[in-house]
Length: 425
Ligand code: ADP
Image 1 (cartoon, rainbow, N blue to C red):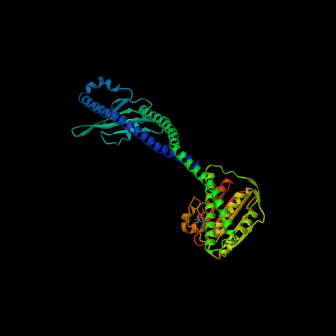
Image 2: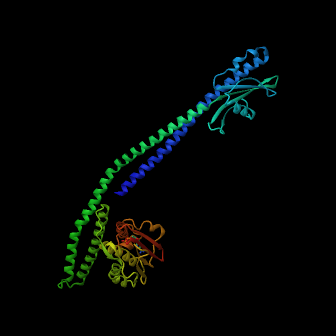
Image 3: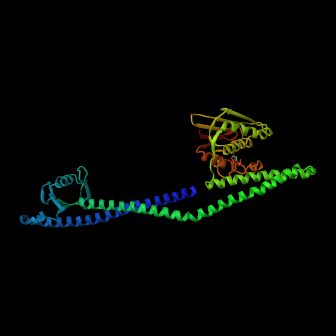
């Protein structure tokens, strides 16, 4: 069932990531477009004002007698300000910026190098409170000579602050939307996998029931074959061979059925450990004795190394099953005349390490990642010929996991393989 929860979490994560990217892009785009539209509007207004002031100033230059009455130029809208400098750099007319802003504005004017007619936004980063002014300049010409320069500006700090606040609120809203979307996504992903879980559950139940039901008829066939095998009235060598073949096939089938039952039960979390004090070293000795005839057939030397006795709280049956799977594989996948070592050691207090090492065919890097998968066999024909069904290592891993341990493999093609099981002592 875990696999479903994992994919549900993965789906939610992917969905949230996509949503997050989408929302970030949205916030950035909204911020940029708001900034652009506000700036362009303000800039247009500023250029227009500069034109108007330049026009007025031209008139004033032609009629200097009016300068005394030109007070209206000195009073302008609160955030707007302008300065007119003659060719010598003397201020001849102005509507001053606020006293806090003026030094900064004059500094900007002294460094002004923006093209005529262009608008620039300049920020005073040095201060604690960021101040921004938007400014433009226009040069007034008379007979082809520059006679004065009009600098018009506007304090746009509030506008930018407002924009920042709007973007911040939008970002908060986006985070909230993301949380809601992730929650809804998680619920929907859960809903979507319900039929899958049900179908999977039915399948698993079927595998468990079928393998359970098959066990009885198989043992009846096995018992019958045994009876026939021992029947002295059957003397025909052909019939004797048929009986031997039937027994072999039934044996393979019984193993497959019990392996299937094991994995079906492990999916259902119906597998429970029966913990008792088990001597793993003694269990290894017993496995070696069991496997000796098979090893002898292939002239493989079976060696036991490590502790003579090492007891821990383990499931006796399952540990024997694990040992049998690993040693059986080692013998199966090692050429004639090879060597298999079973090592039981305690590297540190409270830790047990079981190693099954062979100098057989080895496993490629690519296959290493898959050998613990159910029904995975590197060479299907070879494995089947040797009675393998591809469930052995999946079961071995399940047993180790149930014990809270880990199983790893080290292998080199043509040199051999070492399975390392680490358990709590
Ligand atoms: P099988 O029933 O085929 O042995 P397993 O799950 O036990 O299934 O093993 C999966 C595959 O891993 C095997 O088919 C084999 O190719 C490979 N394998 C397992 N143990 C060894 C080993 N000691 N040396 C080389 N290959 C191995």
